[in-house]
Image 1 (cartoon, helix red, strand yellow):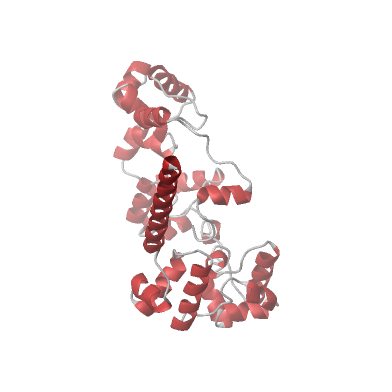
Image 2 (cartoon, helix red, strand yellow):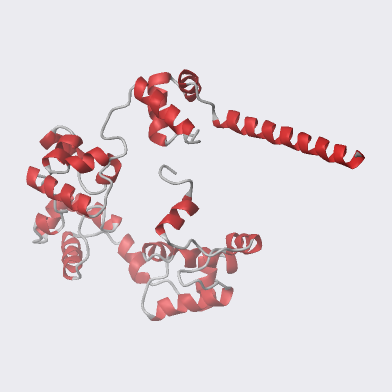
Length: 307
């Protein structure tokens, strides 16, 4: 909405197609039936039972928490809608809950079992971050060892193997990222660059983003930015509102709206000072002109008819 008139306009400029059109009946049916799966197939009672049997044959757990962790949320919803619940669906599929998982929860973890599970995850290449392991394992590790890092050390896993690598933003690293972004066509605004680099690191090393762009040899690209890294003030806002009104643009972008709130207290006062109409005023004027033209045309038709 900031750079285009809407999502369809943005798709047109990017030359990409939107989602397939559906009729209102299809949309209503899709909301009512519990969604399609990732392949676009419709769920049914028979398909829910068949899917549960397939998972059971592949020795995968079909308990509610297991299905959610495996990303089978659509199957859980379909079982609730078409069969009356996941438990009933398992009964119709002839599946009994595996006692292994339920006992694992009921049986307290020992230090040996915790170490064994951590090492097993390491062998399988599974993540070992404290927010990436099962909650029962994390809680048991903290209870038995005092903390998760202590349990990791007891299992013989070095902290570097599960801690995320921290990027060290030096001046050279920041300059390289900015130059790569410029060559890739990024508009070099703060919001765009925040997805590629830490803005706090840029300010720590250079003071401002504009100074960092100049240090990277991107002075020309900085000058070509939409606002040229300038701060908003009342004079610039008035000039911007008048220029936009002259182009027929009477609405505010999100950044312009925030600046207007800060310097004028609201859109109405800003438009009054700038001497520009609001979108409502423009629409009302257009309607009045249209009605006036319609009346003139009607009088002309009547006069010609009597003549």
